[in-house]
Picture 1 (cartoon, one colour):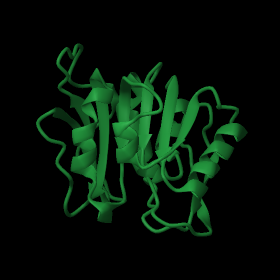
Picture 2 (cartoon, rainbow, N blue to C red):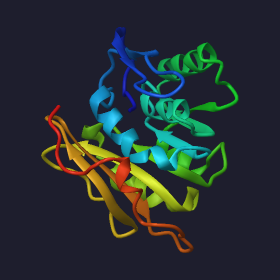
Picture 3 (cartoon, helix red, strand yellow):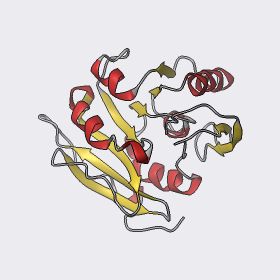
Picture 4 (spheres, rainbow, N blue to C red):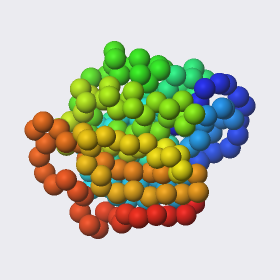
Length: 213
C-alpha cells in the first residue's frame, strides 16, 4: 500500500508464491506504509489463483508492490503499480528491473485518484487491489472512480481497519473475507453490465471466515 512521506529503510516482505517465490521486497519506514502481511497475502492469492493466469492487474497505493508483484509471480499477464511517493516509485522500478519484469510490470508515479481520472495505461483490468493508508479514508472515492477501468467480471481486493471495515457497495458481490488483528481483508466480484461466468471462484481456491494475524 502507499505511503505519505519519505523515510529510511525499514525492512522487507517476501513474495510467497510463484516464480519469484522467496524474493524480498524492500519496505521503507514511511508514514502510512503498512504492507499486507505474508500470511494474509498467501490466503488472498489462494482465493484468487484460478483468476490470475493471463489477468491484467491494477495495484493502487502500491507501496512495496507486494500485491501486484505477487500477482505477476503467480501468472498474471501484467500489473500496473500506482504509487505517488517518488522514492517508493523508484524502488518499484528498481525491483521490476531486478526481476527482469519490465515488460510485465508498469510503475505509474501518481496519486491514485488522479491516475484513475486520467490513466496512463488503459483498462480493462481483471483484478484490482485497493489498500490505501487507513487514515486517509479513500475507499469510497476510489471505488466510485473504478468502474470504467474494470473488466465486466473483475475481482476487487479491499483492505481496511479490522474495527471499521470499508463497505464495497452494491456494485460488488462478496466472495471471501478474513480478519487479522490489524486489518479486514475482503475479495469481491464486480456486478458488471455484461458480467459472465460464476460469481465465485472454485471451492478449492480457499475458504472464507476469520484468521488471526
